[in-house]
Image 1 (cartoon, one colour):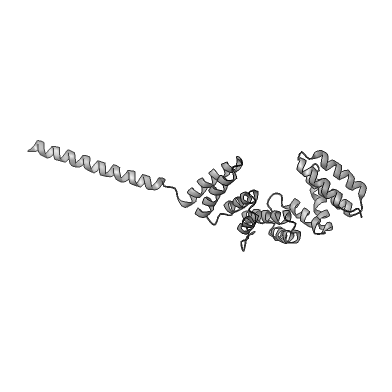
Image 2 (cartoon, helix red, strand yellow):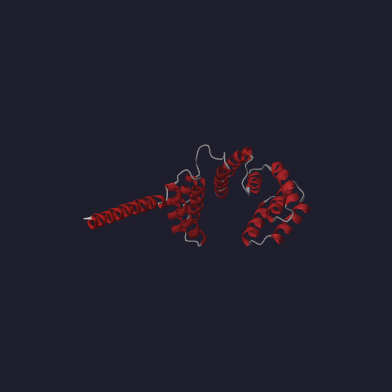
Length: 226
């Protein structure tokens, strides 16, 4: 009788242990299930990897997934917009960035910068400059903002504003080919042809980008001498 009771007790204890282990396994499984935010992050990582490897359609798919999981992420929204632009889907790319109240954070500044860049590429210079002015008021400037603002100023005829910023930038970055190139345009508009030619040649010499040199040469040539 005692042996039977001890056997039953062992089975009972063993059963309880298996129940406890099973409960722990279930709880552990729940804790390792990724949240929507984590799933969005994982999708974004896959999208970024595809983007780096120029697999645009795959990158678009993953970034759409990331944004659907975390629609409040300005980073995912901006990156998807960049990919769509590369694919030639410019209208959808622009709509993704058209959000009210954007620009109040650093992430918002990046999106406004990208939105302005799209407008500049489509020669909508006044609209682009208006957006960049919103960024300038926040003082939360993302990298590249000042050079883009200068380009918008030049394209809209605000040469004095461009000149003021460029002379400050050239003191900080005397070998920046973009700054020197834009300064050559401003000098030419101000009638300083000798200085314009000097900065233009220096910008071409310093630039490693054939595309930039070609664009600058065309821009400089189309700028009338005052």
